[in-house]
Image (tube, rainbow, N blue to C red):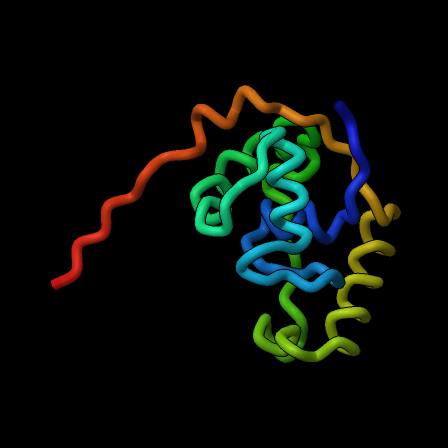
Length: 125
């Protein structure tokens, strides 16, 4: 299956900075939508962080131009995008112009689910 997503939602995986214009919460949002589609699975909220690296790698495999692609941080730093809709919108519009597109088509890859869902052990001292 193939589906188009806003390119900022896709790049949020490959860059490691949430730059989506859609609202992301711990229980849902654009990153969950992309991961759920890619894995053909409804992820529990805690699973998103466990799959981001695998999803990002698959996105880069499908779209090699994203390998090594780095966003320039906003002039005021990444934190300037938090809770500042005007700055975030301007940043995303610049991204669309720089890449010449607003969406990116990705193909689901449910086979990567077996590689991505794993339990992490945390030791608290």
